[in-house]
Image (tube, rainbow, N blue to C red; front, side):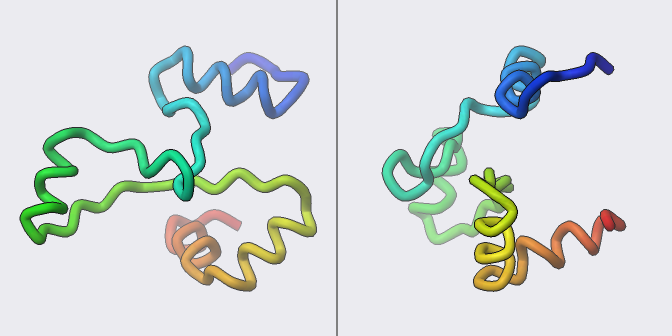
Length: 81
């Protein structure tokens, strides 16, 4: 695995590998989805689209985790410490 000098380089690497979308705002841009997922949602389905929140700082991380418990337990359920 290559080494990265910044978080931005790490994100770009993931994008170039085809592992992630470009960062976007779920509030203003919507959640990146396929047409099939959109159709499933419109038909009353419940497609699960995984989202990874980018933190601005350690303080921001703590605020998000305090307000959104799934941001913590989804990670701990995977065995992440």
